[in-house]
Length: 202
Image (cartoon, rainbow, N blue to C red; front, side):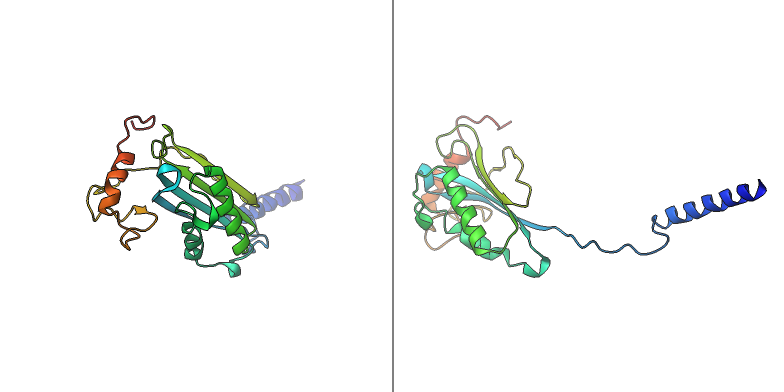
């Protein structure tokens, strides 16, 4: 009986020691063989002459087969921006947002070695004669889709000046300035930022 009690106490001590060491008996945990690595980037406040003038956010998220196959995301950014002007990459200026998002997603999928991709276009309400913000999301492969985001269109300071705000862009490029709003765009940009109706502008 005494031996059983002693054995039980020793067993409890051993279990406690293993728990303190992370449950692995003091051994270092092995790095798992299965790994999922994602990357994401955003292009925000992009003005385009599509759909009679629209303000966009482009959200891109993708999953690599492995870290060794990572690439410079600026390559993907450059590809997306080719679609932004009306008619860019052969997509008509009056095409629905769903058509544009699908075309961009297909282009990204074809160019880069990915196992998953989720691409989302958000359009500011009033910038295309619609009172509500809306979005289109295309998801393919092994990755979770972008979740719904509300009112991600903050105002751009200084948009009534030639210099504009470098956080905002306008396409097609005017006067060779791809990150500045110029005088001819200021009036249009101001209209988008100060709509007569806005269902999310607290």
